[in-house]
Structures are given as structure tokens and as C-alpha cells.
Length: 106
Ligand code: SF4
Ligand code: F3S
Image (tube, rainbow, N blue to C red; front, side, top):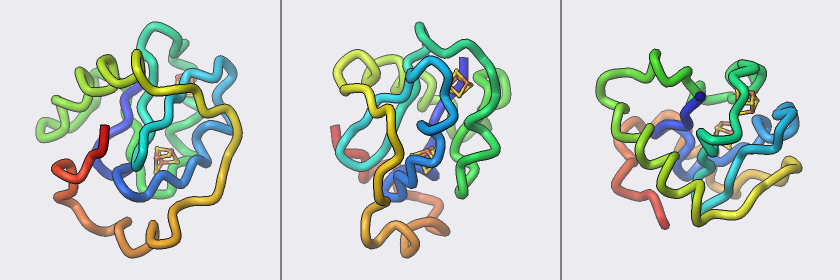
């Protein structure tokens, strides 16, 4: 499966959802996650994300490993997002911020 990591937090550009053939992105208040039971490992979303938030499960960086479980957990409660929508107005101000996992809203 593929995993959305910290870079997505407060950016939520949603370019990724447009290419997903199985609509497995789920939307939270300020980030998206991928439902690991639906993702077919097509890889298409990886290149779409402007902040490189998406990794194959085996390639998730060491300091981001907890996001694998977070995607699994939150994908069961968040609703599908199947079409791109405008990013938050302040998304660009957050795109280079590295430490923002504490800001994930559930
Ligand atoms: Fe969707 Fe493919 Fe990305 Fe999985 S790897 S989330 S199937 S676009
Ligand atoms: Fe997040 Fe990147 Fe998609 S910022 S919403 S994973 S395009």
C-alpha cells in the first residue's frame, strides 16, 4: 500500500485524488490518508503530490513510520475524497514546514 505522510498536513493540495483509479483517498480536516485495504499500488499518486508526501509502505522514511498506522486508522473514519478541490488558503505557507505532525486534526 501507499502512505500519506507529514508533508500533507495543512497543505492538502489534493492533486493526488484525481489520479487514483480506485478512489482510496480519505479526507480529514487538514490532511488526506490512503485506505490500505483499497490501494492497488498503482504508484500514480506519488508524482502528483507537490510536497512529496506519498511513499510506498516499504519506503516510508524512518521518522514517518507512524503514519502507516495513522493512514490505516483514520481511513476507517474519514470519508472518501474523489475530486480535487482547492487547497487551504495558507497551504503554501506550510509546504516547507517539516515538523507539523502535532497539527493533524482528527
Ligand atoms: Fe491510489 Fe494508486 Fe496512489 Fe494507491 S498508489 S493511493 S491506488 S493512486
Ligand atoms: Fe496531500 Fe499531496 Fe495529496 S499534499 S492531499 S498528499 S497531493
